[in-house]
Length: 123
Picture: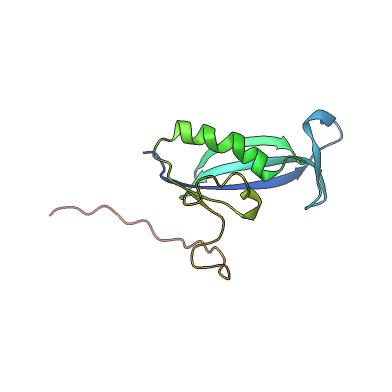
């Protein structure tokens, strides 16, 4: 089954000295010299796509690569949740990219685990 909504986020990771300089950069926001992993998951948290870039790559630039590829592969994709780093020229269709948690600017995301229900049986 294809997802209709996804979450995109990134993680900065320190790179070892043995990693080539071409494939790493400096993330000034987190003060990390290394790489960034841009991760696309569905609303259940299942991994859909990963893009690894130098840490100096902006979130917006990585999303310009990651999201069109995801849209091509997942045709039902209609909603994308992202943090504020993914805004800018990327939001050509603002109704599709949500940059705040649902419920307003003062609220935080909260994950609620719900017990899995057994399928209903007849009889």
